[in-house]
Image (cartoon, rainbow, N blue to C red):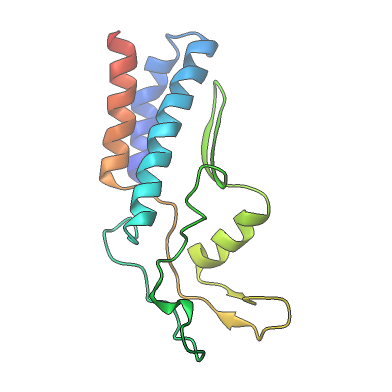
Length: 147
């Protein structure tokens, strides 16, 4: 988080020089790039520290989904959204899907389906900043400011 605060203090005077409409366009562009980065990381089944996600619990049923990748649908644009304003940028899960993502992000207890037994899910960090993401933000800002 300290790196993000330093980035924020570095960026703030530069953003003050452009109009709110231009800041919103810039935020939307950077948000879209960040979403693509997060989607690729989810597709690669990696936490922000480049470690692999914890394996899926083994299922008792034959032909279970244990071999499939986690979060195949969750990474789609329909669920992983960008919300950009002149003063703020959010990339994340919103609505009902946010609860499911939060359970995995934090490693909380939940039920897999309505009448199932409550289980503790292993922590899998779906959203998080990598050094590449920080560089992506700075590059997007510098590209915008340079013309």
